[in-house]
Length: 69
Image 1 (cartoon, one colour):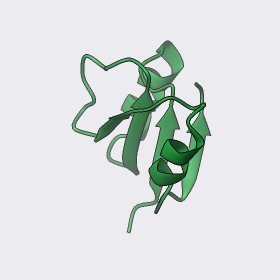
Image 2: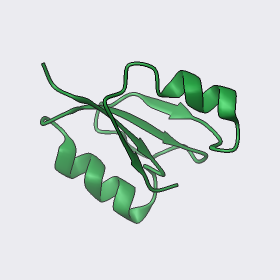
Image 3: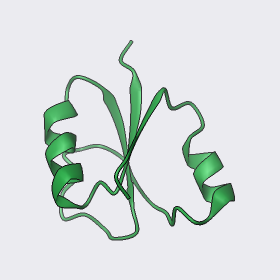
């Protein structure tokens, strides 16, 4: 079973690169305050990192967080 990876700041330059690089290798969950043009099929959640309750919920079931936001 693939590890579930949350990428915060997924819409930025590095986040977009990592999304493409990790696609097919990991189960991705993407998050940012801006909507992406394309997620490559990965689920996207618009979230503000300063909202602790939202972040707790977002991290449920996630194995690894790549924090870029």
